[in-house]
Structures are given as structure tokens and as C-alpha cells.
Length: 295
Image 1 (cartoon, rainbow, N blue to C red):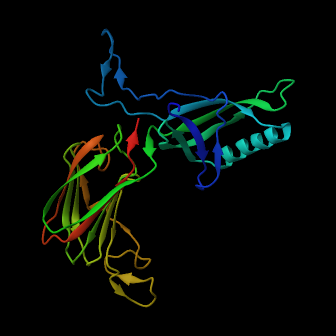
Image 2: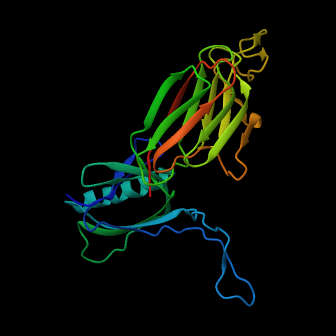
Image 3: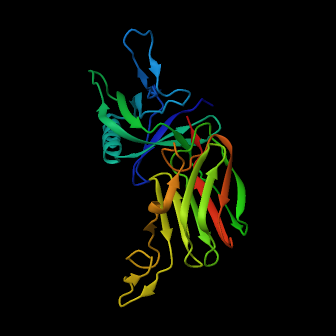
């Protein structure tokens, strides 16, 4: 049993993996916060422009040192080659940690310098190495939290629980799928817990229309009916995007956010009260999915 430690790096392809040797493994990181202090001539101290707001997290430098020990010199050289190739060619991948209960968390990261491998005379089967990464500010659960339900009322309150201890600011996807023409219109989506709100002034033109809200890329997209097909199967007239059935079109222009809101809906740690409000005859299914976030 051991406390949480840095276990491995999985490359962007999702399959290429380099597991860090545990011999002498030392993992340190310093998570900087973005402050907003401004000095004034003749005044002591400084003014905090963040006020009572939470300081945003910056990207986090990660330093890893380890001792690579193998049974033969050839095996050591092979492992060092694999370390260089997998960490560099893997590009933007994920660092994984493993805790005493066997629970893993991940964070997107990139190698920022090739592995440092100082050599000394007499090193036959062991090699110290130092690694440097830059990762995003949060760790995430490996399993997604997801739920869905059919709705037939104009006002629907849902409790969405973020199991982590940090805000979910990316990876939250909410879809609203109509069950009838006009199954949702003029949506107001509110996280009462955080005070965030998205108003979308549109409607479901078909019984299969889907509105997709994604806080990863701050997008709001609509999958509407294909309109009137003319000629080739990839040409339509109506409100559907050119490209055929199953193509989402950008619907962000129909949205309005809260007055001081920098992005879409996020989730605070713990229970969040999320409210769906629509006009007309409500008939839709909501689905949300995200990964619990950890500091």
C-alpha cells in the first residue's frame, strides 16, 4: 500500500503506454494560481482585482525523477529508448495516478523536455532519469458520470452530483433530444448552485432534433431534421447544415449567457441543482455526461 503516486503516461492514441519505474520515483509539482494584484502609488500593499473570486489555476509543471533498473545493460538501453519514443511521440497524452485503493485519475499532459539521463562510469543496469511535463490544472475520474431521463413538463429540476473536489469546467456535455416536433423550445438551462445560465431561443423542428451543449469547446450545436432533400443526398434546403443527416450545425448565435458568465455551465463539487425550462409542449430526453474533477 502507498499513497497516490504517478503511475504512467498514455499517449494520444490511447494505446501507447509508458509506465514509470517505481525505483526512486519522485514526483513534484507546483500549481500556480493567476492572481490580479495592482499597486497604487503612495498606497501600501496592492488592490486585489479578483475581489472575493477564486483565483484561476494555471497549467501545472510536473517534475519526475526516477531510477531505471533492468536486469542487463541491453534491457536498460531498450527501456530508455522506449521512454524517449513513447513520451515524445505520444504528444498530448494523459498522466495517470494510482492510489492506495487502486483508484486511478488522469490529467492531460505533454512532455516539455526530452528525458534527462546523466551517465557515470560503472552504470551497467541502472540509470537515473528526470522528466518534465506540463499538465492541465485538474485530475479526472477514469469513469464518466452520466444520467438521462424523459421529460414532459416545462420545468424540470435535476440534482447532478460532481464526485470530485474541484469544479468541472471541461468535459461536461448536455444533450436534449426531442421526442416530438416542438418537444423543446426556448430552453433555459440553469445551474442554481453556481448561478450560471444558458438561454437558447430556438425549437425542435423534428421529432429527433438534438441540442448539444459542450463546455469543453464552449459550443452549442443543433442536429435538426434534414429539410427538403434536393438531388444528391448531401444537399438540403431548410435549417439543416449542408452535409446530410447526422450533421450538427452551429446554434451558438441563438444563445445568451448570464451577464458576468465567462463560459457555459460548470459543476461545483458535490450536489448541483440543474433546472431545465422550455416553452410549448415539453417532450424530450436529457442526457448529461462528465468526469469528476479533482484538485
